[in-house]
Amino acid sequence: MSDTRLTDGTVPGADEAPGVAPAGKAPAKKKAKTVVPQRKVSWTARLKRDRSLLLMTVPAILLLAVFAYIPMAGNIIAWQNYSPYTGFLHSPFVGWSNFERVFNNPAFLHAVENTLTITVFQLLFYFPVPIFLALLLNSVMSPRIRTLIQSIVYLPHFFSWVLVVTVFQQIFGGAGLINQVLVNNGGSASVNFMTNPDTFLVLITSQSIWKDAGWGIIIFLAALTTISPELYEASVVDGANRWSRMWHITLPALRPVIVLLLILRLGDALTVGFEQLILQRDAVGADVSEVIDTYVYYQGVIYGDWSFAAAAGLVKGVVSLALVLGANKLAHVFGEAGVYQKS
Image (tube, rainbow, N blue to C red):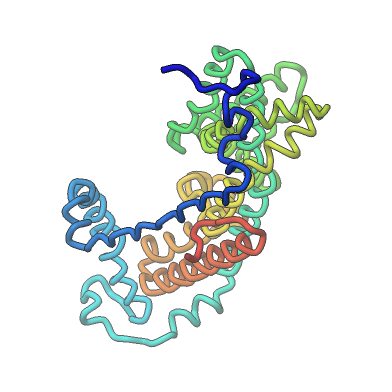
């Protein structure tokens, strides 16, 4: 088919822009987009569609119900003068007297003070360590060196606290490596760091860092992989140095994860390492090592005051819940999602 051309060799309409109506003609109206309403899926249809996924959650739900929710009914002994020989069905009710004993007990209040001291100290000196290690590993360019470092720092997480305390005993104990070096080099007196109350706070924080800091960097490394490389490339073009890129790109990307973990840590503020502390309680003394969990264990299991221990545990749970809700609300104020967000 031959093209129709004018006398000057041009094709009619060739100079008209696409989508523009010719002169003298009204522009064609665009068709309005029709929004198709989504059909609401019924509950039975969703149940049939997701039945395989729901069946896979049944074992976890049963496990949680048997070992977490059903035992909560036993908290009723906090309002009883409970005896394991008569059971909670036949133990007499005493009202709120057990809670009055909890708040009027100087030993319990001292355990709360030790718990909060350890928590605040570890928030300042332990919580930032996984962030620093993640940033350090992320800056290592060689994959082989990065894998080696990751393997080394992850390994202590799989050690039990018995093994961790034993390793520290062999290094910092009275007959440990450090004292052997001091004695062999002319030192006259050995220092047992494992039984020194003045250094106990630093000791247990060091143990926690060595054991769990390597495992904690996994979350931050995963968050670092979500940062687009184009942001770093654009900042380099604009002349930003390494510290500027870290301050304006890396740390803001990590902020939601940091806030989330901080909220969870605050919710767990009244629960510090029970196994770690009870293993070293006799060596260093209960005055500096007694926390809420160890105190409740000794009052309930060792001394048989079950009702008092249950009341103290309930107080701890309520305060922990209030800390989580308060920290989550504070995260919403600063524009972060937190643990949960209202729809």
